[in-house]
Each structure stands twice: as C-alpha cells, then as structure tokens.
Length: 243
Image 1 (cartoon, rainbow, N blue to C red):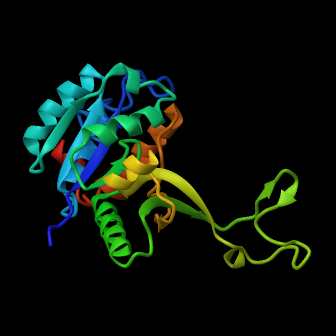
Image 2: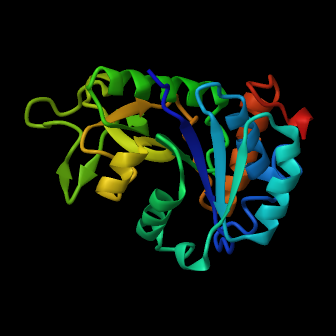
C-alpha cells in the first residue's frame, strides 16, 4: 500500500497591514524571520514530505530561494496570482490550491504560529493519519482548550449556573478555540468541500501557549519574547543559532 504524500502549505501574501513585513522581518535570531523559522520547523518533521510556499510577495520569493539551500525537504514555490491574495480571498485560495497542489494530504499552516514546533507537527500529522485509518475523523484542526467562565449575549455558556453558581474551573466543559496553527485534510476532500475542514474533524488539543498566533504588532513582540524564552533557548527542533 502506497503511503499518502503529505504536503505542508504555507500561505504568505504581501501587504500585511497590522504587522508590517511580518513574514520576513527578523524574528528570534532568524534573518528571514517567521518564514525561515517555519520552514526549518517543517523541514524537521518526518511525517511531512514536502513544503509549498504560496505567495505573491517578491520578498518572500527571494527569501525562499535563499532558505531552501539550507533544507533537506523539497520546497515548492508557488507564485500565486494577486487575485487569490486579497484580505478576504480565503475561499478563492482554497479553490486555487485544490487545483494547483499535487498531493494526497494537505497540512495547512501559517508562519504566524512560531511556538507550534516540529514535534507538535509530527504528533498532529500522525494523529490525523491514525484517525483516518480508523475512520474516526476526516480532518484535523489545531485548537486551544479553554475551561473558564464565559458569557454570551447575557447568558452563561460555560456552565448551568442554576445547578451550581461557581463550579471549579476544572469541572467546566471544555471550549475549543481554533488557533489556526494547523489544518490537515485529504486533498480530495478539500476539493470536494472547498474547505480546509471536513464534517468530522479531529480536534488536536494544543499545549498551552503553543497555538499563539501573531496578528498584531504587540503579538509580534510578545511572540518573539516567548519563542526565545521557551524554544529558542533549548533548540526544540530549531534553534535561533541556525539563522
């Protein structure tokens, strides 16, 4: 039986407004920033066969051409048309990649998740493969887990306060928050559904902080601090000394 090919996809469009040059700006000792870090993390994942960077940014293209010489996995550079790189073009991008990528399984990730390490990618992809084999899930989403008191539209959603007003937080029902660090799905299903998520996703519970997403300038600063403190110092799969 042929082992399905797994392709990690990294979308990197130009023109970030909230964090200027967030993809390639120096980060944690890496000259090409979050992009370089993410490529090196993915390069260390044995469950991933190849990496595809889809971009319309000339700076990203030049960076990939430089970084790929340091990596062992095949790096595919997709020069994405601008029409698939707008702020609200996710659905169009899914359709485009469904037609473009030649693979069996897509592991969709982002450079903006610097604390999602190679070991987490390995664990997640293997969990997806096991779930598919046992037919208990058709896709995977990385999620943060919240067990805290929460209100929506004036009503408690974390618990039934008519039963117990203030239960212990560890007894509250888990709320799963999609952190966007990773989506895994068979390409054929992505094409059929035109979505990164199937009907029965496996929720991959991400350890605390590991799903941290850089979305604002303050996140970039905090993310770099966390990376240096938690990962860069001990070189979990990737060390800033490799930059």
